[in-house]
Image (cartoon, rainbow, N blue to C red):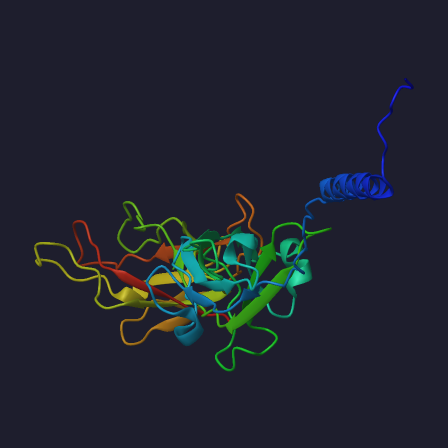
Length: 323
């Protein structure tokens, strides 16, 4: 009997074929899906320049300089505080530094460090909370010397007046970062001042004789060239009152050394303050030992009679502007 083999119909063959096609399609979909990935987005924010929004300058007596003018302190430094607010559209955390300079307006900021009487400092920045906060505060104390150049009263915008310049700098982007600047002109007031020895001791002088010549040195402690006025409110007296006075006019003074009494000199007055042209120069360079001084010379002529004991009085010496 012949061997019988299964017969595969045409329909069965088609069913198998479609099944294989479906399996291949599923595998293809899986393979296509396995090729998907994530994409990273990024963008760089264009940096904006910072700004100095406000500038205030106050001297150590808490007087606003832009209103009253800066007045140096006699023979000493004057602490000036510059403060205000700065901002940055990118956020105040992007502010790297705030620099402050005080300079003669006519000199200009570019030459500030090359000139005498000009000053600079780096401010402390505070009050920035980060995030979307764009505003911060700044403050700096700058010690100005007693000889900063004075300016004449008038408009602070005049070129011979002074300027405070505040520059805010971003964190470095490229070379030097971005900067914002603001300025405020102001006056520096004149201060006529000097110091002298506390006393003039003529020593022991015989009746009718002239004393030895004494030297009185004037040291400029202000910020302009000065002369002085001289006055004695009273004659020279001795404590007991039992003897005659020595008239104030018996004291003579001169700018030249070894002067002859009564020649090229002047007598002290008690009726008016007399100008004594000493020509005491203004200090112009911040160098040790550079404070200007000038020597003046004094003599006393003793009356021929009626005086006895130790005499004294007080001279009033007042600094006045040298014309």
